[in-house]
Image (tube, rainbow, N blue to C red):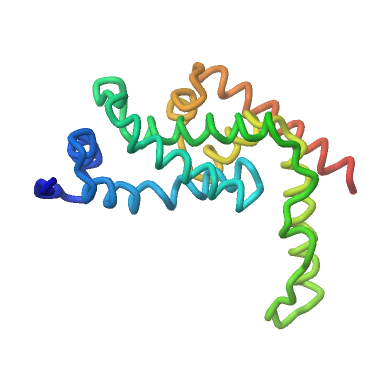
Length: 186
C-alpha cells in the first residue's frame, strides 16, 4: 500500500484518519507523538517502568488494531489514547499487586557534590513513591494527570469517564490520603 502524504505533526486527527485507512507512515508519526506522554503517565500511575512500557506497547497496538473505533466528534485523539492508557494501567494494577518498584531496590550513587543532600533527596523520593504506591489506582492516576501532565479537571474526567466534580473530590481525597501516609511514615 502506498502512503498518502503525511499532514503536519500537530494534526493528530488527520493522522488518525490516515491510520484508519491503513497508512503505516502516519501510524509511525502518531507513535512518536503519543509514546512519550503516554509512557510518563503510565510510569507515574503504575510506578513500574517495565509495566508502563508494556501498557504503552499494548495501547499503541490497540491504536492500530482498533483505529476505526476513534471518533473525532467525541473528543481528541490524545484524550482517547490517554483514556486507553489509564484503563490499561488500572486493569494492570487490579491484576498485579506490586511489592516495590525495582528502582527502590538499589540506590545508585549520585554525582551531586553534597552526598548528604543527595541522600535526603533520594530518601524523600523513595518515601513519596512508597506513599503513592499505597494510593488507590484511580487516585494515583488522577494525581499523575493533574500534577504530572497538567491536565484540567475536565480532561481528567474524560479519561476516567466521570465528572469534573468527581475528579475534584478524587484529587482531594488522594491528597489527604497521601498527606496521611507521608505523616504516618515519618
